[in-house]
Image (spheres, helix red, strand yellow):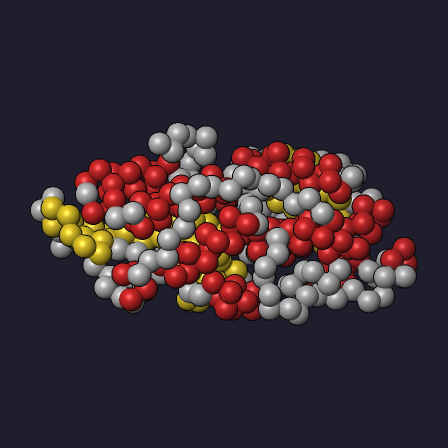
Length: 320
């Protein structure tokens, strides 16, 4: 996201950064629940279970997914890795005036930062002082050149393209790379969305109780300063786009069964590499509870409540 991008203040020493708040705060608590949103919902009145309160064709004919989770895999080929890296940079990367690429990570994702460092073959990982965050900084020209060759034609953010042209390609060292472009293709059947989601997406289980009714929604959400990439994702999985005036940000969210099925189908094939993968598995498990109609009894509801409580906290907690 470009919400308060990291700004490198000094070169050659451990960097000092101004950090964006929204990525590392709980976005869920900041959102107002919108009554017009479609949702996965069911009701419990006076302790007795009832059918799904959302009687749409979408919910009544929920598409089944396998209870078996595919083996977790990292991008293998250069093309897979390049698409993932492009998505991650579009979400949490910044090409600075200090002639560096900086990628931000939650502290839980140190293994991902070091995986990228090893895969790229360049860079240093730093812990951000007084923040639960890390940064990967690539400043060697050969490292930047390798990254640009990888993501050329694969990034999708106009803002990142501007950063690259203004802050990197203006250096004479890159004079031979005169045709750097973004990816105009609408097809997201590759690792780009996985990288972008590792940067900026969240998986949420929402429980709303009012008038003795409990409503449950499975929400896949992404926040951005600009809405262009959100429309791309909306066209791919379905969902809604809104604007949060208080934060001057746009947000994409999807809460329908149809969208959830598409999200699961995608991430089962193109795996997340950050700690968000554990949240995704819990979100996926909640979907299975509902598709198996176990949500119609108190035991199933308690399972969903427990999944919600263990998300976005300690991702090593038991999911059973």
